Each structure stands twice: as C-alpha cells, then as structure tokens.
Image (cartoon, rainbow, N blue to C red; front, side, top):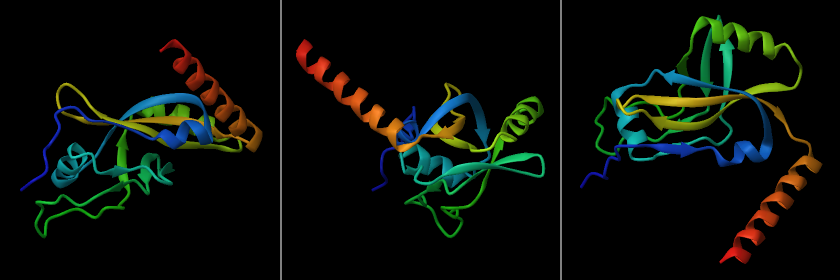
Length: 152
C-alpha cells in the first residue's frame, strides 16, 4: 500500500539555523521530475550537507537527498542529483555580488508547497557560526525552554 501523500508540505532544515547566521533570504522554485514531487509530498527529503552553488549564471542545489518514490518504476529519479533553482536574473545578480565576500555560502532552509501545489525552496545567504556563537545559541534555546516550562 502506498504511503499517504500530504497536500501541504513544510520541511525545515533545523541544523541550518544552528550552524549559520542568515544574512539574506530568497524563495526559489525548483525544477523537479514527477516522482521527486511525489516523494517530497511523502516528506522524504534530507537536507544533510546540502548547499547551493552558482554555475554559468544559474543556481543549483547540491546534495539535497530526495528518496526514490516507493511506487516508482524504472522511471524513478536519482536521489542526489543537482537540481536547478528557478530565481530571477536580478536575484542571481544580487547573490553573485554578495558571494564575493569571503566566508559566505548559500544554503537551503525550508522546502514547502504553495496553494497551487508548486514546490518551493527557501534559501539563505549565510555566514558560518563560530564555536562560541553555537554555545550562545544552545544557551538561548535552553533559557527559552525553561521559560516555557515555567508558564505551564
């Protein structure tokens, strides 16, 4: 029996906010095949070590793992292929200018579907956190957790 397909998808890269500071955020469409969309609707996406890169004036996402569709035949997709991101030329130009700063990277933050059923990828221009910044994030998270417990 096939797994249930969800109408609305909202998959987050929780590790991204721990590892990076987000400087600018963009929403991009993503070029997918049919079995990839069905697999995303099942929630089978892994953001582990995924990142975006500029190649020949186009933006691609690399190492984004979308598991093969369970009901797919020999037409199923390759899980780790590079996928083209659909952004405007103006945004690509802005990202290219920002990438000239050293130590910046583009990472996928969230994958979601629109009301029309289109799959979108929320990406961020990010700068890596140092170890002490990560400790501060852990401390803030623990304080927030404690205050939430005190309310109830």
